[in-house]
Amino acid sequence: MKLAIALLIFNISYGTANETFQAVLSKMYPDCKLEKEILFLTSEQLKKINGLAKASVKSKLANRFKTCSGSYVYVDSHIVRTLNQTVVAEVTSENKVKMFTVSAFLEPKEYKAPKKWLMQLLNKDLPELELNTKIDGLSGATLTAKANVGAAKKILALHKVLAGE
Image (cartoon, rainbow, N blue to C red; front, top):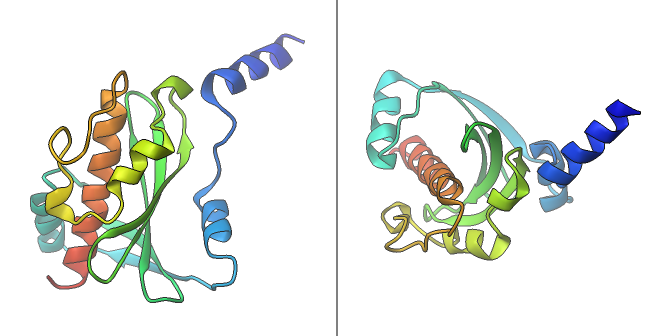
């Protein structure tokens, strides 16, 4: 009984809308067989990504999926405050964010960015992703805003470096 109550409290506090990124990809691209690419980045590529994103990307391993239309989908997992968030983002050949969704958010739900706020990230190129100047802040969830903008910047920087730009 205590376990059931604890699980109920956990689900209410942390939300139940979390999905695996695979489930999100299946919903977003039901008629497309995505081509998964496992990428091993060089130290030089990692240095370029860090410079473009103005972030500290440590992993030399990256995954991306090629869609039927030729765009690429990236998955990024990171810590927001103390818990994990996973985002799925599609990037166009023009190096702009076409789709950005949160597939898993383990922080309390009051810190989760609303879809309307996330829409600010769409159709943006790397220089346009500046929090509190080109992207509005998120009152009461500053760390969430920073994490989402940071994820979008890392993904666009990765895409740009892989495209050889």
